[in-house]
Length: 161
Image (cartoon, rainbow, N blue to C red; front, side, top):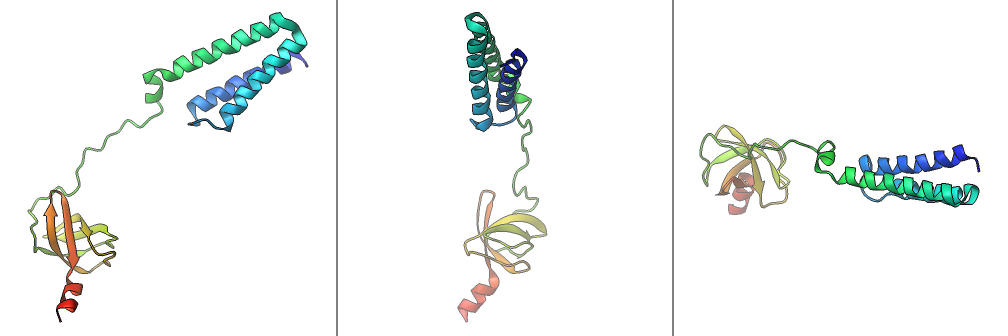
């Protein structure tokens, strides 16, 4: 095998390892293929060019792997690839106080969570029933912190009759 071809195989293997570390998370076919190419290139270097060149290629690939590992374990390396934003808003920041018994209207389907308008404010609400359609009148069942439980009024009236 030609020396240029063996060097291309080794370079391709190292390139696949870099791709594995930077772009493709986890142990995937890319990392395994990269390791396989490196092993195959080192083996061919030993067979075709002897112990000296084989050992040199082995030490070079080992040094490249150690440098890549050290580079990938640095904290700043992964900050470039990870999201840096945080959510600082809160659910249901209310201007008016909502209490049990307040009435409103669903804006979206509650399945079991959705948006409703109560006391002129659009808020996220929860229901104990499985689904509540949009534009259904609702009543606040209970308020636990920012979690507002509602029930449809139509179902209540049908059960009472």
